[in-house]
Length: 122
Image 1: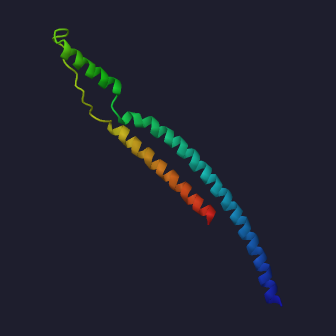
Image 2 (image 1 turned 90 degrees about the vertical axis):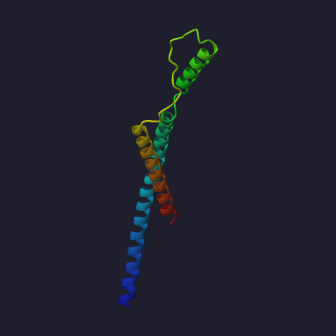
Image 3 (image 1 turned 180 degrees about the horizontal axis):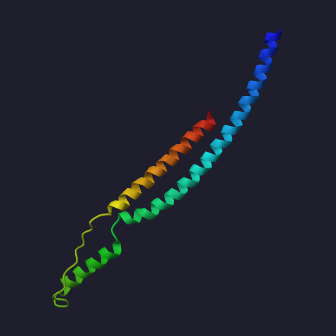
């Protein structure tokens, strides 16, 4: 029967095509997972480095408090000295923007890894 021969050939060809496509997409997803993992690690390293710039410098605060304590215990030691302010104006606008972009890139990278894992399991 020519009709059954057609469907047998079609099934064979489509299964081969599906197998090749599945293998190709599996390799692509593996590459995406590796890239997302490496990018997440690098992004995390930058986030940790920039995180310290979001906090006041503890050495400057300690020095300011020490000067206040010295002046409080012996005001005659430096009578004309101005006491430093222990206030911190906060991080610069650029540091905050950079930190936001780093967190956004990390979130996108992790989302990419999640989608790749879901694609591999499907």
